[in-house]
Length: 228
Image (tube, rainbow, N blue to C red; front, side):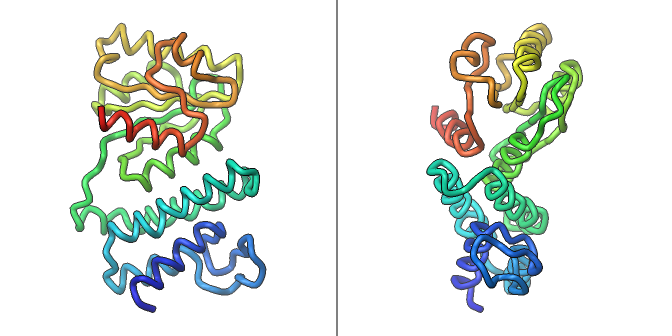
């Protein structure tokens, strides 16, 4: 398989949500054919250009997945499956990206706030950001405010993503932002928030830099921030 065909196959299998050969995918009759991990392994062995592999094989197909989700063609499990493909590929490609001198776009700390155990949306965002070239530090869910602030201090990350799925926990986001302010860190970090009960209005109320309804908007917001 030549480089172009390999990348096209990887992209196709990301859209199908097939991490490994045993996975079924959206279309029928794919079980047993190489999945993303097998194909990325082959691409690494063949010395396929890492930048092209990430852009055309992972990032672009995830944009298509996002469009399918927005149109209602894909549901959350379909998007999760595709995101898992990107995550598995990025785990394999991490060392190659360093060798190829692919520069990180910056450290991005992400966490679900204290009291909230939901993390599906956060996990998708984390995987997408990795694929977009950010060094993601995923703290997990139910993370106390002090730990989030300490992590920003420790890493000097210029970006922080906060997630909440409950109206009772989304207020914790304002506590995190206030604590960043108290610790002299607020001006050093861009805060992006997301989750079902949040909104652009709420982001403005708590002093966040941006509200993101999903992973795709988060990447768009970061692109805009990079331009400004």
